[in-house]
Amino acid sequence: MVSRTDIAWLNTEQQESWRAYIMGTELLQHQLDRELRDEHDISFSEYEILVRLSETERGRMRMALLADAMSHSRSRVTHTVARMEKADLVIREAAEADGRGVEAVMTKAGRAKLTEAAPTHVRGVREHLVDIASRSDFAAIGRIFNEVSDRLMQDKPKDADIRSTQD
Image 1 (cartoon, helix red, strand yellow):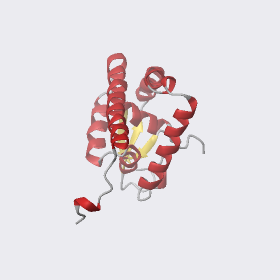
Image 2: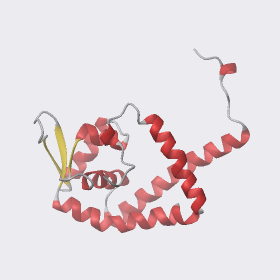
Image 3: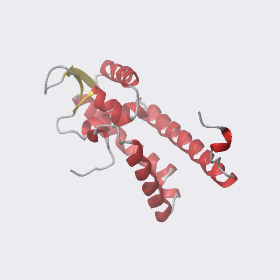
Image 4: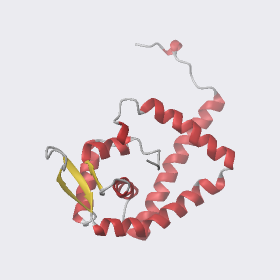
């Protein structure tokens, strides 16, 4: 066990930045969630699942990979997908590749919901983050979190990495 004296504790400036990050990300995700719920009756997590599915070739993804891509537990994704299934946004089917796993598949209603909600989400991301940061500050956020992601994604499947929007 590491002793308290072996820890490189955060100095005051680092602690303030860390707390600003925690508070800011929590508030930002809560605000984006509220806007999506108020305007489209869909949660931030449900929206993100639709985004992940829309970025696949046939609008389908194994549930386990979806959980990894969202950095959520499998049970959390299962519960969210079950809610979405009741709303006809997705269906669950046996995996096409081998029939052993389960895939979430976006429905036409799910694609329509994503198309309807995307402008609200993008507006919120711009209003609450992108447009209040300078170009260099926003680029710094990207550099920092690419490094964080590189380190923390090492034990996850390559397909779970959503950062690249190009093939």
